[in-house]
Length: 101
Image 1 (tube, rainbow, N blue to C red):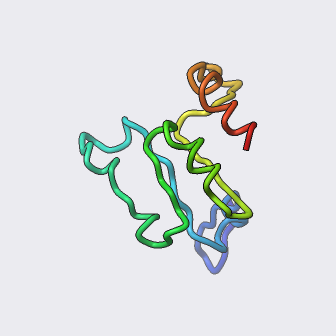
Image 2: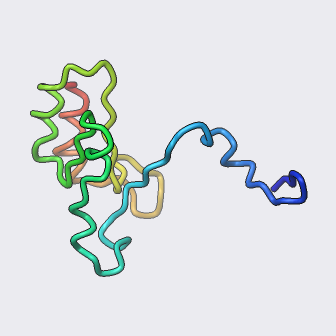
């Protein structure tokens, strides 16, 4: 931590203060409000955002998109060195779609 004008400043966040941050919440992050998962906040802010709650239509969305940059985000990692390891379902079903795009 660093201090600036007497305030504590978290230095690990200094590189990302130049834009908005959106987090990808999972099923345990809504405190029982399942409807919150259906929010289309990003799409309302910018029609270029396609926020799916599953990867079922990701293949079609990526193929139809003419965008130069495409970002795919998710709550669970495809590959992980963490305690839970890789997400097998994503390795099998999502990774090939992303690699083909």
